[in-house]
Length: 254
Ligand SMILES: Nc1ncnc2c1ncn2[C@@H]1O[C@H](COP(=O)(O)OP(=O)(O)O)[C@@H](O)[C@H]1O
Ligand SMILES: [Mg+2]
Image 1 (cartoon, helix red, strand yellow):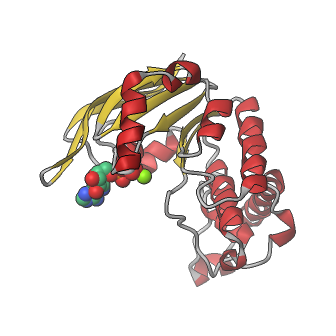
Image 2: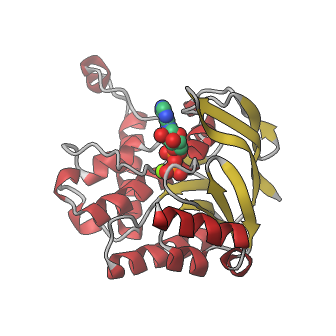
């Protein structure tokens, strides 16, 4: 069953065509890779999928529902969550608080509201804290739960972003370069983490430059170049695809 379909997506910024008729579909439970040189349109595709950028044309379909044009929170509600290429955490909030930001139904922060909190709200908050701890444990960060996010290493911040995305109870996770800036052992940690997430039935779409990770982890891979989908298939098909080889050699020369 296809859980995410991007149909004929076009998006230009001024004169630049960031996406030119890109279509792809992702099946439930798969780990789907998106690769391509810098500027190919990968992040824009995520922005369109999660409604932070509106496409000029084309459709975003989640679980057979056309969600094109809906606001970002409606996308979250339908089970899609993402991480960012440029990490977006609240550095002065604790890890636990950062994860709780991802959860639905956060209690309001007004003074009156906190004075008048019902026992129901208090237990909801306790539940949220416990759930945040479980998620931090899952990504391997529980020992830092009360520390500020700003003290974490780059690699740890990326894991915290994954925990926050999971906190939305997402069934589809879009990860924008999850191992960028990580060393080999951190990358291996993320490999195991993503495997564990997929094992739980969560669908993963992954933008990544680390070819080893993409080839080992992804069942299928799409390749973008200058806003066009130039190839899609299994990792072994992609590796020998002439257009893909050309795109990568071209970008190395350039
Ligand atoms: N908000 C924006 N405003 C103007 N240009 C943008 C914007 N977002 C992306 N672009 C342009 O669209 C193209 C694709 O960018 P992007 O999707 O970030 O590529 P990738 O993630 O593959 O590196 C680039 O030329 C980039 O400069
Ligand atoms: Mg990008």
